[in-house]
Length: 120
Image 1 (cartoon, rainbow, N blue to C red):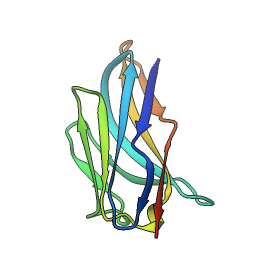
Image 2: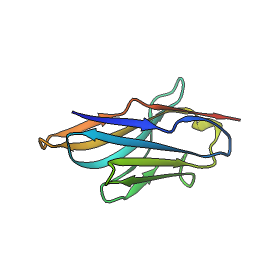
Image 3: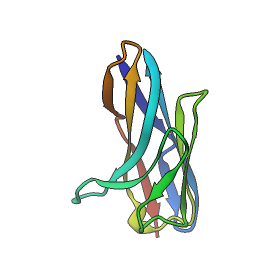
Image 4: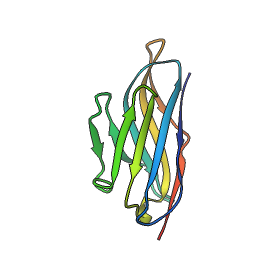
């Protein structure tokens, strides 16, 4: 079984920074694309951005220039560096990954989410 665990959420003032982490554990052969989503209160879940196994990245327009996604394949971990945070960034942040298990099965795995609250 494969699990994703996010950490690093919390309360921050507008203009501040936070770094989220997402670590995969379990019987993993490889991890392909890793993604960050977020869901604000009363809104649908939206894609924040993603990073491929080759470290190519994509960002939603709403976070481009403020957020940076990176990964450390030796630690099976993805990061989301969030700078110049705005009240509109308040949401539960989820990681998602396309994982190949040790049994060579393709799995889509979600984390449990971590809350980011930005005070204005």
